[in-house]
Amino acid sequence: MVEIQADVQTLVKKISSKLMCGVIRENEDGILYNVIGTATGVKTGQSNFGEWVALKGEFNAWNDKVNVKSNVIFLPEVATIPLEAALKAGAKHVDFGISVIKGASDSVIGYEYSIKNIIPVKESNRLEDLRERFNSFSNDEKRSNKKKKE
Image (cartoon, rainbow, N blue to C red; front, side, top):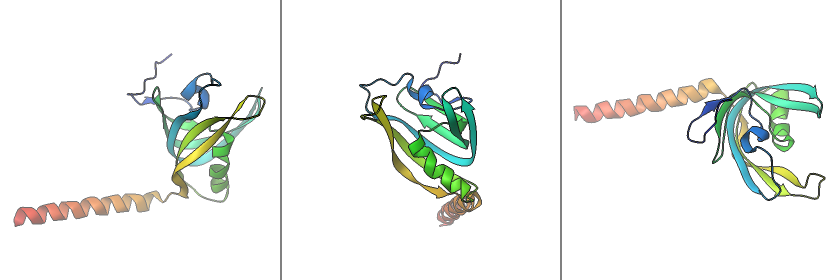
């Protein structure tokens, strides 16, 4: 098994809360991990624990112990629902950035997940984003060349 470290981004088959945190302990409330990504699709299936939903796309998740990148991510339901809804509504790429938080609850397991949106969920227009970056670089280069001439 590959050792995963926080200071090195490691490519993994899938990202999950179990990978990011190991066994969730009752006394570990607060931010568990952060995720940025672009969701492009939804993957569903059935396991011994019931139905599952994963997002397909490009994702990076990290905390103080782990820094991983993958094309598949399993997020808590509270995070998956709005992303899945945006994709089902016709978005091709949905960008987001969240912190996954664990807090105490009266549920059977004794905790619940919540999320904090750091980068609001929005449909990505990758070509426009690249055009903006290109134009920004091009304008910076023009300014630099103009200063050299002066």
